[in-house]
Length: 336
Image 1 (spheres, rainbow, N blue to C red):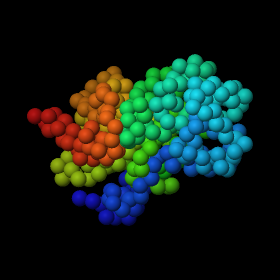
Image 2 (cartoon, rainbow, N blue to C red):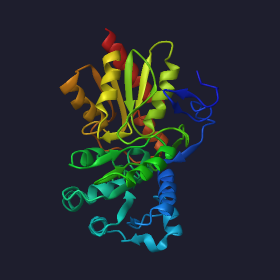
Image 3 (cartoon, rainbow, N blue to C red):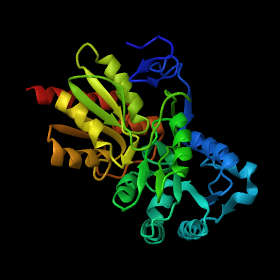
Image 4 (tube, rainbow, N blue to C red):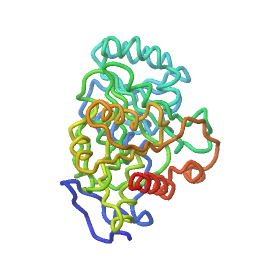
């Protein structure tokens, strides 16, 4: 069943027109929303500087660079240097936005990031593209599925994973006013834009996008869209509460706890390794506060193959049908 109504409102969150119909909903990459957001932010924040590692255009930071070439620094393919320059600019009172592909921004430059930015709690905003298997044919070297684990474990980090391009735009703008290091995680592939400019967004505040009583389904990134579709398709069988956990750190434990005490079961979905990802963060929180049956769905501790995004989604069950299959298996097992 597909919703056919106009702008829909659940828990004060506005969705785009016919948002559950993936044939008519707008599709756009999160990286595009982030790039446009940085360009808009640069209009009013004159101390903002964008730094790239020879990937400004593919990360969509070229929108900022075209407007403000004097505040754009291209360091070349030298990600550790990217971090060092960003740290220096932060010490000098600027607000640097370091932008490149997730595996190189977070993976290759992790130690300098830890030592020169996280340890002194410098305010640097890291904006990635090409996160997760949604990177596609570039293969395992570019399919970053460990970045949430690597940033979440560092003190002082704020970790944000927008659900669509519109929320990515809001996230990069909100990051400016935060303190310390901030990571905004974005995918390369075009995904459904189901939120609107009027949809509220607050860092650290999880969004209950659909109420339910049988199961709490928590996701981030484009997986939130699949969960909303699945909840609608299974509405006559399972009442699913859908939470967009766009901020992994700090974790909104209050919202999660309220939902889980009602449903008693949790299913998490993400384009990230299940080890150390958002599901692991939620599992640790619930283990300490309110243990319940859980299923963590994502990349199951492996390096994926190279292929088209749709083929990878299907093979690793990160598309809607694969995610629904995993959710139903878990729900049926828990009812035995």
